Amino acid sequence: MATELRSNQRVRPATRTLEATALARPHGVPHGVPDGAAKPTVAPMVMERAARVIRVLGHPLRLRLLEALEAGERNVTDLVAASGASQALVSQHLASLRAEGVVGFRRDGPRVYYRITEPKVHRILDCIRDCDMPELAEGRDWAELDLTREA
Image 1: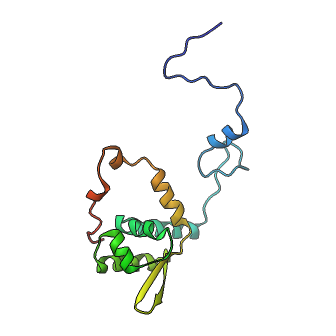
Image 2: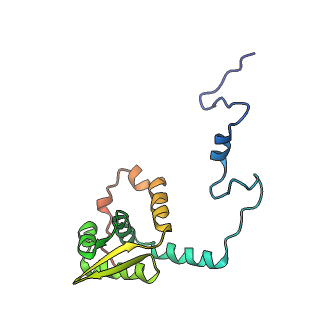
Image 3: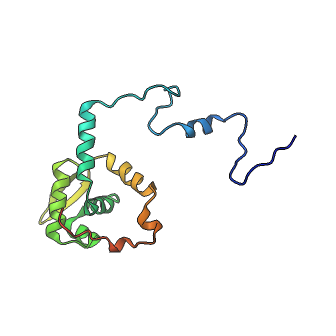
């Protein structure tokens, strides 16, 4: 007996493969945890650190600077050119990132080189890239965003 499918229905197989089951798990639930089991809680110190990192990443210019640093170590002059912001503003935001341990630096003569030291930053930037970004969906150009305003 054939049944008619509506256009918005999909045919689902009777059994799920192991891969399909793994992909269907809620994000952040380890594979050893049975479905419906409580997620492990995050230690208070880890939660506090995560909150500080997320808070310091909450500015578009800081995110742009970190994105420029993903490729590796860069000096302040390169970061100024990449961001379009003034040297003073870039230095101010780098100081905020440095204070939270998100970036590190080294001096080489008169130049200061920065690098990402917080491993979570790469995953956070990947997550941002993977998210549905309404500005892009609306056709808004990222160049329109004012990254040079004060924090």
